[in-house]
Image 1: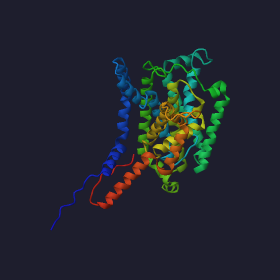
Image 2: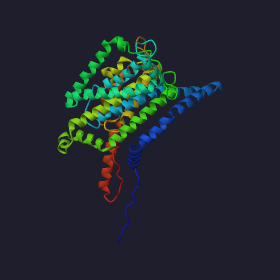
Image 3: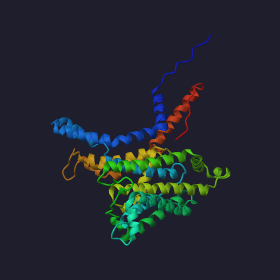
Image 4: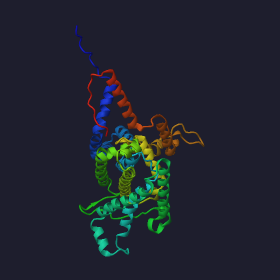
Length: 411
């Protein structure tokens, strides 16, 4: 007597696994679409609040104003995009090649100083020949961004030749030492770099080819400028990691000896990965100074390397979208704690302050959350979700061997 096959009921875990699979495969496209319209959504929220104020809807105005404090502003999203690109560049090394660099602040700073110095030098009243100045005035941002890519690539290749043959903690220490050399050079040659005050007063942040002014006074225009450059280089990273070269990087990460036996020049592969990562980090550094129109010396300090390590590990090293998730969490938490939470004056004690005041020490809170992530979700947020999803699907496949599931390559 034949029996009907058991009816499979879709469980909550099945739905979560399916949603994560969709996010894993198409998340970058979904995110790109949301980010494309984000400034319009934020402006619409501000416009609604202004309209309600004019219409004397006090309660709705107060509620929406409170909500707006928890919605990332356009300038904050610019910062998140920049550090997402920086994190994805860093993740080429850490997540895909297994190389922990503690000196990526050097390339981030070199990219910023390249653009900053060109805008400071190539203008009227400087010793630079007039034909160079006049050419630069025609296409200031175009020329400086191309120069940034060239300089960052050369610096990354030069540093990589020194340290890419090292392994483990020795590689990390060499990169850290070299980045400190860059930092103290920027601090010492203060006539050139501005020293500890940074390089300020940068002018002519303009796309000469279309006559578009970019900078601190044009948040939405700057947002789309950063969005365009971030999108282009994210697609480049996406394609590289999906290419045979990307598979070689992961082979080197998993087992260098086996990759060498297969015929790959491991040292050369590590150098290429280091150069690519440093060059794109330089682009992120250039974007970071365009909005503020200043080059702070902190961009080339070790603290910036620490930030990008935390950001990458927050989201999940080795996952493509991990750096964006980590960047959003890091900067959003900083904004909430240092600006929004401190406004709540609750449980105030004389000579001690209020409970909300403890959030002004946001670095301690971020450090505590980082410790928890390292202890309990060492693969990061997306990395842990992916591991749980794959484990659940493998378990389901063992329980139901006749059930066919579409397998998609990891992005």
